[in-house]
Image (cartoon, rainbow, N blue to C red):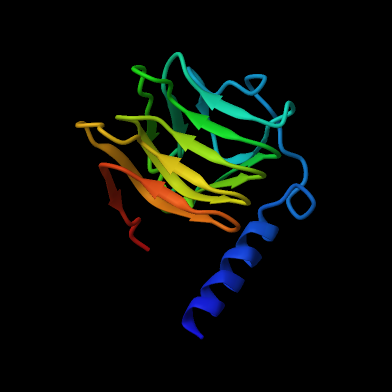
Amino acid sequence: MIATAAVQDARTAYNNMSAGVLPGGVDPGAGQLGGLTLTPGIYKSAGATFILTGSDLTLDGQGDPNAVWVFQVAAGLTIGAPAAPRSIILTNGAKAKNVFWYVGTAARIEDKCNMVGTIIASAGITISTVAQASTTKLDGRAIGLNASVTMVNTLINMPTP
């Protein structure tokens, strides 16, 4: 019963983050989030994927501890690249509990990255790889609705309410 309720809650959250329910998202970097500083809002990948490579992503809460970010990705999400880890940096009151990732297919968080927020993917989520000695960090949650969540050497910090 508890597991069934959890799955229903995850599907409800996923549906409530969709572009159909939360329209109007913008794509500030043509699918590339690296090097951007984003204020609270809805961000939708125009090309169906978001990637974070090249440099880190900063989320600026502008002094509002209740600031919320929703990232809508019709297909895949990739954070970092092999041998090139990336981080999501929270500033000015931004909190991990207020960052949400709607992923239409699968998400991939590369080795040694620092990921922030709740990721809900229609398919699976992979965080780090086998034989990785360094830790990948997730300040949030990872939920795969129709496939597994695979984590290797991943430190998970649950966001405080």
